[in-house]
Length: 218
Image 1 (cartoon, rainbow, N blue to C red):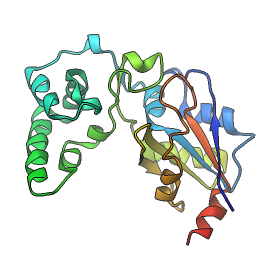
Image 2: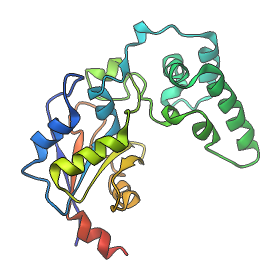
Image 3: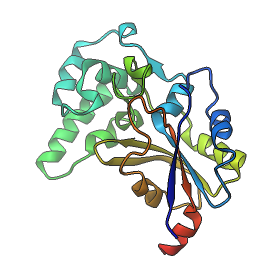
Image 4: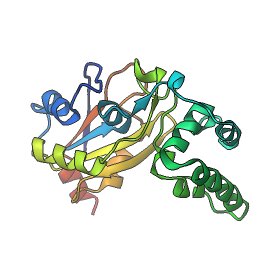
């Protein structure tokens, strides 16, 4: 059985919204017992208030220096993105992780910066990295994502729930997922980014018949 991916269009979600309540409202007639509910990580973070405006930040000289060593397409390649990470994870932790990551590349080991730089290193979205009107803000990763997916599964009585970090560069990363579902299999289904990253306002996708699909893949 094939999975049907159903993107769900919502109104703009804000820090005044509860993400579980909103997903329940928009999917209660769609999401069934064999389905998986997936939600974009940036929208979960926005509803938690994990955002900061650039004009509220003081950019350190260290952040200005370190951001120069990040590829241009990354959210940490700007002083604001790098400063946001340093404020969450610590300036010197980030700086030493960057040095360690560079040395690791010399011996063929990649990804050490994101491993050592703290959990927010891979989650922060810089300005323009998420949907309007929050494209004017730096968006951190969500807090307590495991609790969010557990609450979603319980509320919706579905097979599973997952928070994913997906973009238009064919990257789909699992932030949190409930037990019992093959999260990597679900993540692979989102590789073409059915959420959209701009004004589409599709922060939710339902993976219909995922339980049967998962069983077929065994």
